[in-house]
Image 1: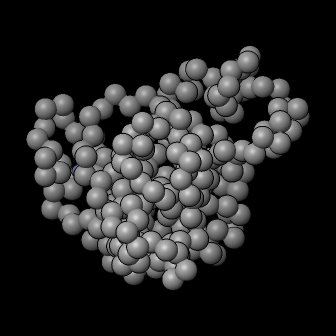
Image 2: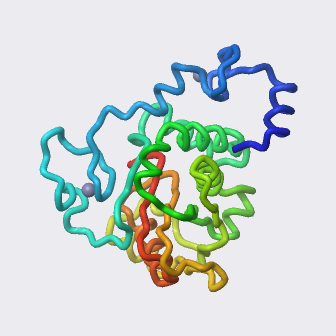
Image 3: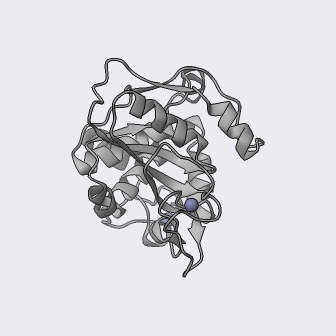
Length: 239
Ligand SMILES: [Zn+2]
Ligand SMILES: [Zn+2]
């Protein structure tokens, strides 16, 4: 969440408008107008409990969906805000730039409030973002997943531990890689910090997007090697 002072200053400098479409908000407590709020948070689809991809209404997903059934994941389950489409996708793309930090804070707050019941049901006792490699973080000046994780942890009143997981080597962009290529690319990319006390912890691992699950799975593997008993993944969108 934006600290109260920063939020107050922003409201003083800018009129109270939707952070996405600039329509006037009146005295709304949200950072988005009702139309943008609905576009971002409305997910009409049934999802796979294992990988959060969209599945058919009556599909049998007890052992996963056709996309993930043959994959082995180190995380326990995935929940999502929505599909990688429309306004949610636009927000995610904007958040990948330096100037996207305020938007990421606002999206994080909206997400945390909207799915609070789901997050609570998971029963995680710490929230950890998927880290960027230090070089990419330096270029972007912030990590959007850390903004999102901070908002979720704040809402749940559980510790947010962004330094508990390290990306220990740079990785290629996953966009052009096949599923097998992504797994190889991410192998050994993360390590749990020796100073983080993860023994016996249930972790909520936060990221913006999940595609094949290879990044989240490697991150979950590192967290479990560090002592975490379970790792639940929360993503804004499934691609
Ligand atoms: Zn709007
Ligand atoms: Zn699945």
